[in-house]
Image (cartoon, rainbow, N blue to C red; front, side, top):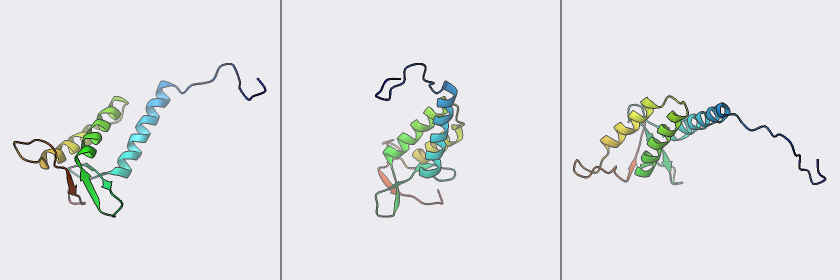
Length: 109
C-alpha cells in the first residue's frame, strides 16, 4: 500500500451474473416507478404540474428498455407487447404512423 491510499493487487470486479442481475433489478424498479396501464402500457411523464402525461419519446424509450432488459434476462415480452398496443392505439392517423405527441393518461388504459 502506498501512502496515498492506493492498494495494488487484485481488485474483485462484479461478475457477469451480478451485472445482469443488477440490470434486471434496475429495469424492474424503473417499471414500477414509471410504467402505467394494464393492457396498454405507457411511460408516465410529469412536467411538475401534477398531471401525468404520455409523450411519444417515452413510449419509444420504454419499448427499447424492455428489449434491452430482455437481453439481460428479464421477462419483458408481455410488457413490450403492451407498449406496442398503446402505440398502435395512439398513432396520429392510419396514414401517419407516428405516436401522437402528448396525451393525458389514466388508470383505465
